[in-house]
Length: 126
Image (cartoon, rainbow, N blue to C red):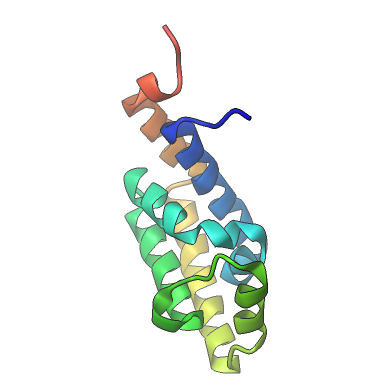
């Protein structure tokens, strides 16, 4: 089995995060299997210069999961999401709105392009 090197793997995590949240909010991100990679996704967002998005991810995790630690297990994540209080779901919706506003300021393509340009050696062979 082949594995991605660090840069491409981080780019996939960032792209997956954006796609999930854009499509169905933080609730969808955590509900789907991509939620199991939340710690790595947070690190990738910071590395790519998307600190505000990472902050939103951390805030969303802290709303739903004890101590902000997102379970790797789909079943555990889904159970906690399904049993979240109405106020928690509403707060997640507000974080979704904040994410959408950030996305307009700096689209995903700009974030990934900026990172690739600064780290070409991680993506291209000579």
